[in-house]
Image 1 (cartoon, rainbow, N blue to C red):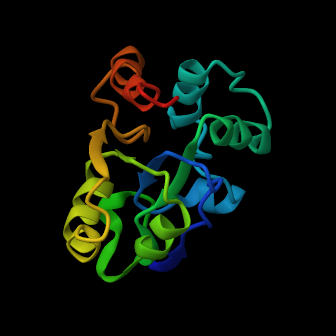
Image 2: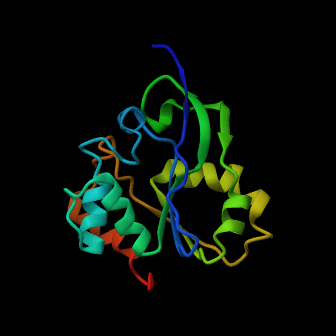
Length: 172
């Protein structure tokens, strides 16, 4: 299988966002669709729809606007990386470039909480990003959540929903 150098999307974030949800890097289906969490079996949009009370069948633009109205921003830890497949475990870390979180957090000063969609995004962020920005942004709180990816089916939807409800807590 040939490795591809995948690139993430621009962040979805209004200036008044207070919560950031981070993935690692878009998978193949998301890259093809040019949408965050586009794989039909990824639970992300179904979870967000339940948590923030919108129809998961809305268009992608309407779903992202629903999150923006709630103060939720979306982005990825990696700006780009070589990856022969679609799984986080396929990312070739020697080729990976982290996004510029210093500029992002300066442009979004109301963000107080960062949630990680899965262990890999949290691990990467804590290792490659946090040591460089922690002193400038000591007010940020970090929490890991179970991956919404179909590759991580160890929890039921109800279990994931119970954990992901933390995104709504204190979101107002």
